Image (cartoon, rainbow, N blue to C red; front, side):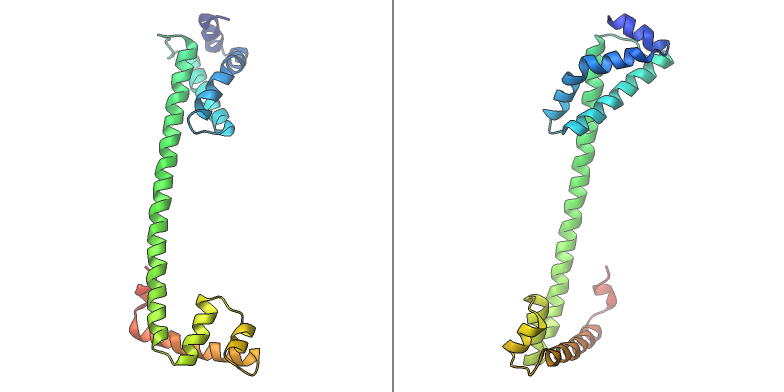
Length: 179
């Protein structure tokens, strides 16, 4: 089929023209997206969107070809893919900015907690540091600090954490932690 025939069929609502276009230029359009950092799934989406654009313009009578239909379809795919890459880039930048903020925020909170832990007694410092920063189990902490049982270590951790909470609340505002 020639471009004029395809255009005429589309203007008359004949979907066989759309199917013909899909089959004829499928590989070329898929290659465009894949060779520009896309996946086959993304390529199929872009190609289908481009075909919808061509179809809608043809049916509305607003499609005036000044080049080959394949060139027109290719340029639509190219533009749609550029917009998608731009959108992905923006999302990626926003995620990175958010992660930087979260990392900084978490580091600041950890610094405040460590500062307050230093104000506790030696045993509390060890219990809380082993548990929260070193990820040790209560059994390991009980052994390391020569407590009589795991329950003793749990009780000590509970009391130390309660003192730590009081220290943090007395030295810092809630807004320091809830930005």
